[in-house]
Image 1: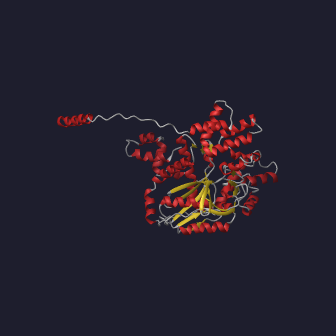
Image 2: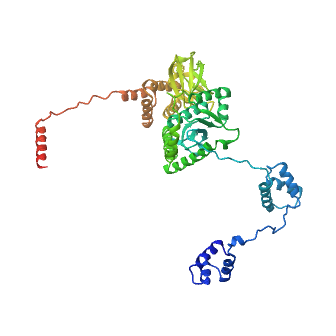
Image 3: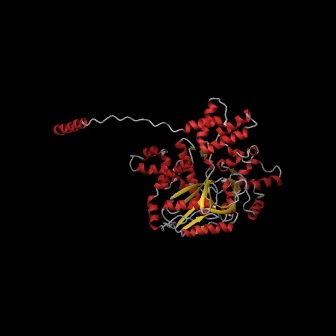
Length: 496
């Protein structure tokens, strides 16, 4: 079959070759065919007749009126569902290999007679007008911190005109995460756009358990930065398509960067955050021209950041613990019976008493978890060693695996006094230092010696002793050597 390209080549060769036969041969057709296309002055595609007849009988012709009525009543019906219905109503008439025929027929119906489809209208963006943000899950990338899975989200922010973007690691779609992420983005950006678009933030509102309170705090945050809020309609993620598209692309960019790095493991969260910042810098480097246009019209930031925390007032119970967002934390026993103020940030919580911060600790993720600091309670725990055996938060009383090994050794060899002996070792860590106490336990285990509080104290005392002052002897300076050095420099200057 002769193609359009061959005929075009034939027309060129006719003007350069001696005969039409040679031109036809070089174009890949015989002389008679070449003569036909030369006379008609048309391409093969222009002479092809439209195929408007059926090559075989339509197997669904007799039931098509039924199918058509079903589609008009319920346009969302799938061809597979209709095909199963026909097989049930007309046993043995339709075989499984005829499904594709029905699918093609219904596809044509949808394109020619079916309901109109939703249209997405491309929007024109203007510098400094609109920013957008969203939370996106990063767990599928397989990030680990010192070998442990690091399940987290990314608060992702972008300017819709230049596509400049940045992000902040967070662990829930809470107001604290939203406030911290948005403010980080604005201060890194160095200015404030006119409007800010988000989704319905239903997850964040649900977490807060108080939609009105959440809305007021969010509106206050935007009002502080003079940002006009925009929210997309429920279930219409495409209305926030700029950030949704960037979510997909940033995860792809991070995945590629991890492959180049050769490892998904990081020493700590700060190292991972710096890794993300470098990726954002690389992505933003190609957007300088449009970004400069945005920077020229962005409004000024306020004088300082707004504190983005949730405040709670509560009392400290007799167990020296507090319950914050369904998680248990310990505080110093001095605060038992006192009223304290808790400030909950996205990554940590602060304990305030008498307008002074007395404690700061990492925030627990999830619910029904606990973080008990042995330093808060050990002074009273050694006075009540019998309470240690069935203490609800006993697992938190082992600062490291070596302390647990010491306790297991004591339980095995001195079961009657194990709790009391271990608590005294823990008290040594409280008074003398956790690292030196752990080192002492490590030495006793390595040398297969009996573990006891006296043995630990003995090693700790040796390690804590100040080294003797080293005597330093300085020889007298011979001044004549300086004279020789000066005379050498003068000679070098003369001959140089």
